[in-house]
Length: 352
Ligand code: KG4
Ligand code: ZN
Image (cartoon, rainbow, N blue to C red; front, side, top):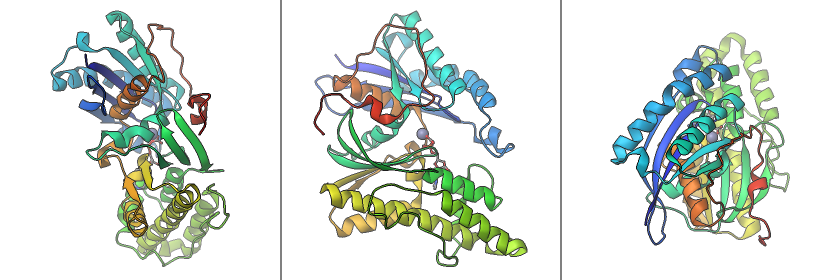
């Protein structure tokens, strides 16, 4: 019999709920419905996410969104076999809302629950697309809080090859945008502005580009953007698009070069890009171009599933259950893990 998984995401500033079906007899799980509420408009006035406001808004949104996805999928709560939620990493208060609601629903329905790692959700989100990848692959995980290159051999079989030693790529976008006076969330706004600018107008550093390893560092770039913005003074306004384009080019250059290095070092022929920065147009263009030259396949989540959503959480839960990696359980005493390294959920005793 097929199984229905409800997924609830509430780790940061989006409330996402979805229903995914594990097909009878195996195969890639399918998305039946998903709904999302972004808190961007609420946090914009403060220039960034206010954790307490985020938690309260998740409380307001999560049940109406759950009702909506069930209706859209033509299902009722009683049809759900497993309730999954984001257990971490993320904002503690925000995570507690999703965890609390998921466990309460599951307890009331006498159904098992399963806590999901947010980054595993991003990592497996390309399986929600019409052109899902096959294992093994290299994953470039680029979100607001994380930048990692990983070797992925299967569900739960992840080896971190390199990661940022300071700021994440999304943070580099967001902090540079702030320096330029752009509103939150900086990444997509900076990238839109960059479309009208010259990426070679300013020489900005490409940190660790030639370090030989697969680690990243973006803190120096943000400082260089700040220095440049100060130097420009009143001239910043008319040169903003140029500075945005130069910043974006520096970030994307490093991400593309390091990903190509990871592919070369491992001999892999397939790459998956996931996380919010995976929505970046220039990153997609450059990576597609470079990978096409090398006959390497690139997979992305659908654009609207790059940033946080419930579909990726339900999908990760479904794939973990399918792979026998995790059993959903009827233990409703929940906890959340605001800091939770992805390597700690790696399947044990597997030779990578
Ligand atoms: O994965 P995500 O939604 O949340 C986290 O788990 O962190 O990623 C959010 C990040 C933010 O830093 C945002 O600025 C960035 O992704 N982002 C972008 C774009 N869309 C979102 N950065 C560059 N270009 C974009 N189009
Ligand atoms: Zn995320």
